[in-house]
Figure 1 (spheres, rainbow, N blue to C red):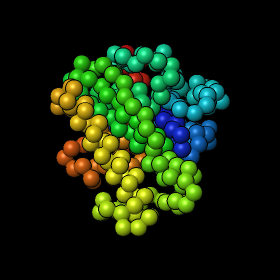
Figure 2: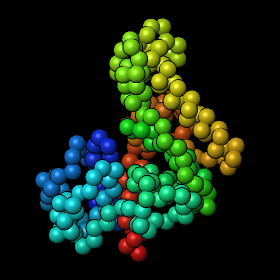
Figure 3: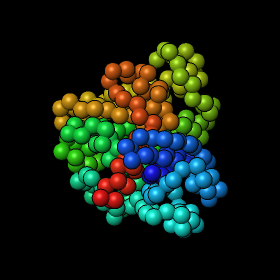
Length: 242
């Protein structure tokens, strides 16, 4: 069994995959701790693990994993992945972005795929039909936009995220909400149009905490896959075990 660990900016996601690449178990935690991992090892016969982090090094956790497992892989710019890459600064590429496009290519091989990850930041990444990672874009996330409108102005209030049926704001609160949410929605449509103009028909996968919202707004146009990074990590781990 494979253990895949995705340490994001605000939470840690863990997934256990069997030999058929089926997800057997999934959980979220605020931090990655030995206590969480120890409980997991008592439940599953895990043989190898991969860890991806956008935070600091996890030396203590990695040392613990190495005492428990046959193979422990920490994703970095030097890790072998089943993609070619045109990214010019691989050392600065977020591990979550790399894992996401690997996962997208695993789900839709031989197709161009645009990945939108809506988390602390919003990222767009594109993998072509010949399995080449082309690069993408980084934008402020939804909560970051709400905070910026409040903190960088004199009077605008801090608004919490609430999904609305109408795109027209009829108060300051709903004007901010529609401005942010529908602004991001139209960004997604614009990026989709631009990539299709360049590469023809493509798939669009949305992942991250707001994936369900975008899927509900753009039915039949996009696919929501909240566990895309874990799928990519499992694919990378298997690729390195060959």
